[in-house]
Each structure stands twice: as structure tokens, then as C-alpha cells.
Amino acid sequence: MEGGISQLPGSQADPGRLRSLLRKVWPRLAIILLVLLSAVTAVFFYRTYDPPLEPLTTAQVETQVAQALASATPAPAFSSQVYQTVLPSLVLIETQNGEQAKESGLGTGVVINAAADILTALHVVDGAQSIKVTFADGSEGTAQVVNTQPDIDIAVLHPDQPPSLIVPAVLGSLRSVRVGDEAYAVGNPFGLVGTMTAGVISGFDRSMTVTDSGKHLSGLIQFDAAVNPGNSGGPLLNRYGQVIGIVTGLANPTDQRTFIGIGLAVPIPAAAAAAGAPPY
Image 1 (cartoon, helix red, strand yellow):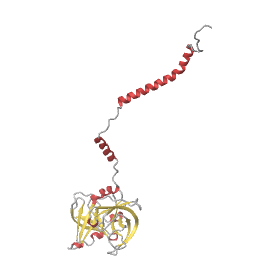
Image 2 (cartoon, rainbow, N blue to C red; image 1 turned 135 degrees about the vertical axis):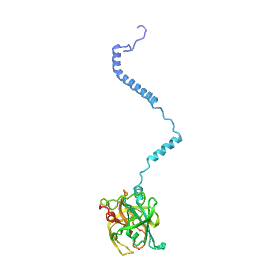
Image 3 (spheres, one colour; image 1 turned 90 degrees about the vertical axis):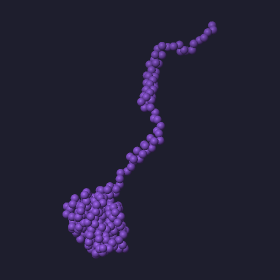
Image 4 (cartoon, rainbow, N blue to C red; image 1 turned 180 degrees about the vertical axis):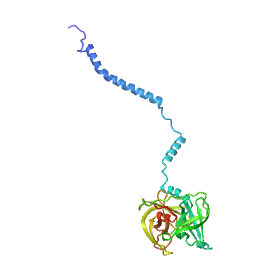
């Protein structure tokens, strides 16, 4: 046997088999190439049209934080809105029953119509020789009692010189008021002008006997917003700033004139009737 190099089986190229192999591999290879091309294109456009963000300066960070905090500030509470609504209608009432200062009195009233009539509690002005009223704009003058309803402790005053700007309070309805609803009292307790307290409606159709006069009042609204001497005659308000009652007194089993959790108000439909307001 002559010497030489023998070829391994199948080592020679077979054109038919090669074409068959290419037909099988080419679709997959085309998909891979297409994916790579898409990736390269995406990177190109990202770099071109959306360049990397530059670091923010300290001032820019502080500005963005301040804007975020401002947008997250909660809306004003109901109590703040109620106070701003009724404040222009609030009246400070001071009475003089004699020449001595100890015979003077203090209470609250609320303007209820365009004529500047003031609704208040009768016991605030009962027997007064002179009545001084101070409006929310600071204007002041004297006033006269023009109507009373003694059975519910309500009086209507009319100023001798109405203010230049008259802002009547909005009178509300009791039809939708329920126990547990918000209640706000605004007045001048102990001479602290424009004081607001908040609580809830505690009950309806309550009765009380006035210690000084022995008079019996009924059909009252009970609430737990703090009231003290000087609040008498002031408005009791709902969450919309509407007057739903006129504060007439407080209940204290010790016979002290300090608040322990039970305030009483005349419902506004009955109170407003004294000033000729339409029924609700």
C-alpha cells in the first residue's frame, strides 16, 4: 500500500447540504441582526433627544421642595371658613344700667338683615338705660330695642347710626341639622372680642330655668362648644357659617356662671321671627 493521506468521511464540501443549512439558519440570523439594529437605534435616539440629566443646584432643590410643600398644604378647616363668614356680621353689645361700672353688661349680637337689625338675647339688654353697639368694621354707636320675645329670651335692636357697610349673616335651616353635626359659637366671652369655639350639636328640644328671673325656656338647642358670660346673644353656626341659633345660656349644676359642657341656644326660626324674618 502506497503511503499518503486519507480523507475522513464527509470532509469534502457538499454544496447541496450547505444551501440547505443556510436556508434553516438564515431566518434566525436575520432576527438576531434586526434586534441588534433596533437596540443600536434606540440607544442613538436616547442619547440624541434625551441627554442625561445634569445635577440640580442647591437652590433648585430648595425651590422644588418648597413647591411640593405648598401644593400639599391642606384646605382651610371648616372652623376657619365659618369664622370668616360670620365675622362681618358680628356685633359687640355693651349696656349701662346705672352710673357705676359694676352695673354695666356685655353681650353679643348678629346683624340679620339689610336694615342692620341686630338679633340678640333679651337678658343682655333687658332694663338697660343705654345700649352701645360696635360693628365688625370698628364703627360704634347707640341702639334701641325695637322688638322682644320674652318667652324665648330674644330681642331685636336697631342702631341709631348703622354702619356704612352692612353685611347680614346668612340664616340657616334646622331641617338637616342632626345630633353630632358641627356647631360653632362666636361671641365676646369675658370681653374677649371675636372669640370662636367649636363643638357639636348635643341635643334638641331642651328646657332650662333662668336662675335670675325664674323664667322657663323650652325648645332649645343643646351644644358643647364652650360659651361663657359675654357669649349671650351671639350666633350658633353650622359648618357653612349659617346661623342656626342664638345663644341664650349655659347649664351648670353648681349655679356658677362658667361653662362645663352644656350650652343652649334658641333655634333660629323662632328667634328670627321676632325681626319679621320669613319662617324656615
